[in-house]
Image (tube, rainbow, N blue to C red; front, top):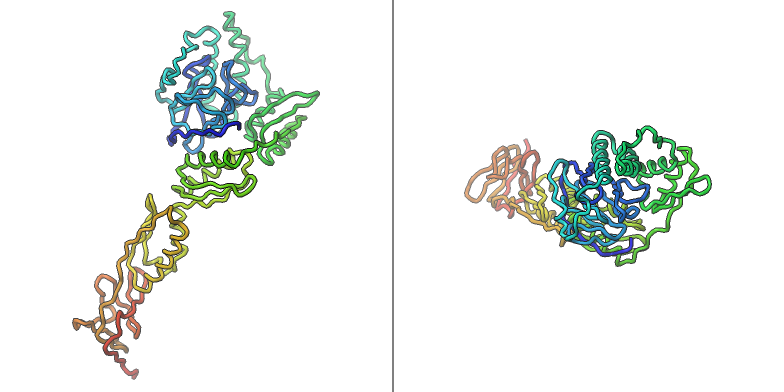
Length: 458
């Protein structure tokens, strides 16, 4: 990764199946579906898709389709998103169907079956070098469409092999179309035993590296690439199990400065709606503090960070979410307090409501103080409480048939309803117990009764 400039394009959250269609260039008209996963575009043997474009570099760019988002990162110059250049090392979230230009080729990604913009929407003012189509270009276009037809009905792993095979045969088709002859039958090509093809297929299936170079040295193959820790050993085992004599070499990891690492992490997490700060706490270690819209978004962002940023080994997560705020409140309250309170998750915080007696309200205030210490200023705490207070008692009569007499002379006994609080289930010296829902809440007398008598047990 050679650059630190980053650009954020609005998110693509469409769950529909996606297709890549070539609008301009040698493969104009070609189309292939894009399933979730990583797609490498370039002239390398291990790239998933390629174009008959002389300006296409080895592993020119990477496209990742995951959870409704389309992520693009450029590994070589000459990539444009819409009318803006995409710097090398950029990690961008693409908004379909914004056109993408790489070399002389312009393509778009959008929901399968939808209408796509014209190549002129790139706004670069350059002529469409693909029109009119010469016989070789026409053959390339037909091959590209054949890729689309093949890919629509077979699994991704087999499809990648079919795509690679078709792209390898493409120059032969172009040659025969140029001289006006019918190419030989494809059955004459037997790639099943080609070690290079087997290696490329295994690398794609394991998805263990990018920027891979494969060379034949003496009687064995040498594979060099950017591997995550342990992936080079996994690839070596898989290739040995396939009966191949290979040597897997891991390139030295790309080293980012602290400022580059912070900028790149900030760009990634902002694509998931996460707001906050990033700091470097050690070699390859960062801490993120801030707010995330949900636990799922935070987990997805952390997954992308660990997978996409070279050299990142540890992420200290201090991102708070409304989901986490609700869990904290439920675990911090006593069982009785939980039964008296209702928690509602909101876009900007949480709303807590309920009917609380004075003692319960004191307990809640302690919980609220702990909440604000942990979640402020990112998540707002809103409360709507109804105080539960007994009417002032004039006197209390205890015994087998206890009752209280309130100031207006009304006598309340067990089984009576106390205004809107609930049914009285017990009366003692300190207060009364009221059933609220399925639970009983003890309410102390708001003031000392003027008199209290107790029947003698006979």
